[in-house]
Image (tube, rainbow, N blue to C red; front, side):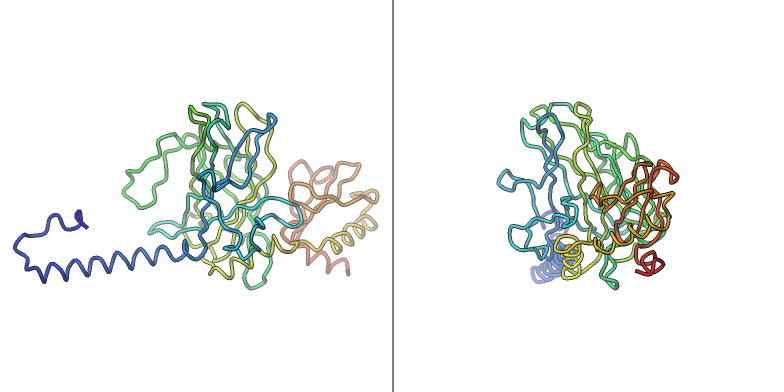
Length: 346
């Protein structure tokens, strides 16, 4: 308040000055409460702890007793002590919540944290982006793929001195390398960029900037929950970590976001019994593509089957994907799971 009123005229009557201060304080309190509702409702801010274990990069839920930020499970509607882990695949899920700014919808959470002595000084942490942009539709109560034309843009390859002089509430740091784009079809632009550099004491603390938008750059993505997939490497330890998922709340009230979390954590997002029936039907009817009966496995977030001709077919986010053999080296989408089940008469 001293800064706000330091230029006030000295001949203002006390009562007038009191009223002006009261109005200003009321406006500031309202703005603070309005912009903090999401934080108080969900407290969706946390860090991903990065360590080196047995010469491998490991990402895990951070330890609040060590000073980092961790979302409490009960905030997400989960039983106390149950962390958000995908029920089918065992993939850890880190949560965050987009904020609305005048020119964009963005957030710099979750952060990446490493404790003193955990890593090699000067080592650079990088992410590997993969998968497809997932989306929780509140009407269908189901995880699927994000709508066409919607993307999450991740600013990677940041320099070590982010730009804070852009004149906006939320500044995009200067970048060395560029952006990664997550959409329903996969990853566009750079798939691997810098997370940050390990400090001289072996610790790490850095935040990346996430923006949700249309592919035209406008901040009008549908309300819902969104999820992306990353793995981590370092220059010194190039073998990738296990996959991690980051789930973002984009405008859902807390109760609806809790349903999105439950749709992954408290129940499987894939009907595995029905998926097995579809796989077996495909083996019987398209033997040139799927030449023999195979055992279903869980790999890279998919419920899948792989065959001796190098073809793999899998279910994820209510869609069927395939790769290898006649399908080529890139993962392609064959269609919606529900539609293919209906076509097969199952």
